[in-house]
Length: 329
Length: 263
Image (cartoon, rainbow over the protein chains, first blue to last red):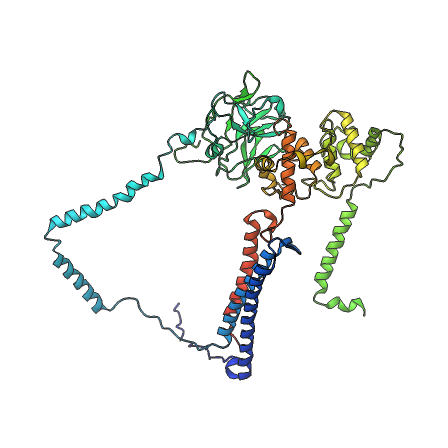
């Protein structure tokens, strides 16, 4: 099947605007544009006036929004009016009064003419010959050395990004025997302090003299939950990590590291607020919805001689999201 | 002028449809309303517990069981204490209007005395946390706003939002806004753990710390909108919505106007 060739239909016939043919319409457009500019000026004056005359602590009631700071409201409205009407006036002006002749800009080839191309190649070859690179190999090699080494400087400076994390990402302040203390009051917790159905935000008790940093809170944070022991659906090992219905999980989501602390007491589900990963507390924080790939790490807990809750061992896996060196099974 | 004149009007069908939907909705609302709490002749001599039991049998037992032992659709109330009853009934959450995901705050069905009677009856079944009243909570005197803010951000903000505006949970459940909530209801919610909310034991958050939390929430409730419209205080969500819907809509309109040839 052959494709029929279209003939160039050419430009449509130019339609004159009313403002081109009638002076009356042109004058009216001029007045409209002037009104738009004046409205913008009124907006600017209103902005300045509301800055000067409206007290910063006065409030007005606006439907839908409610009680709102009057100065901020009128500053915003004034600025919006002053800028919007300048734009509207400019567009109206361009559309109604500025010339509207159609102008044709023809496309042309990008390729340079053969003559120019030949001249360029000849000039480049001539320059290279004059520099004598082919003959003076000492210059060529030393120049290669100098230019090559320059690239090393930024590479070496990458060291300023800090040392490699090594085992740091696997470590938290939880050790065998570390007491569980409340965040932020730092009080240790007894089993009897927690009713069934209650939760507590927990951090590790730090050794004397060690300062609690934001960085350490971001890795150590633990959520303590007490449910009825018979509600657990755990294997023997995980069950031994709980104590009288109390179970502890790292609060740092295994997906992107948000704090997972939205605990629904009736469903026993933990919800991450960032991407809605949902974990089942009764099944060792098994992921039941959302993008998280692994359960939240569980902290094995028991009680010490004084009856306070302690960690029986550190987390058995790195907390938080995946990283390169992590064994992500 | 006869109404039937308008039957062929182009707006007739949409108007009729909206009218029918409103009629359907209100009919359902009225029909599904909770059995009315007809005032029984209250005999002054009968003790509060007996009165509470009578109210319970009338308004609550169809779901919670004749002895408050619970049923398929409702939990047992034995041991929940007066605080739980006071919170659920005085905020209108109980009785529920329908068995959806969550009991929501609405106009209470029982007056103060009836709530107290119901609470006394449930408390008589088994010991549980006692109800509190606004007068007994000296949060203004004993609370510490800064401490309350820290506790709130640690324990409450994950569900109730950093400005106490409430937030979404799973399957259509949500943590309600705390705007306009009374001090006693905040306190009772913390000690009883209503619905999805866990309990916050008095040993993990002491009663004094609870007063601080209340003081912070009260400060958040009366926080003026100093920066103009607060857009719900839920972060960039509403700003983004307004920018995408209103802003882009406006820009599309202007673009269309720009591209139309003047006549």
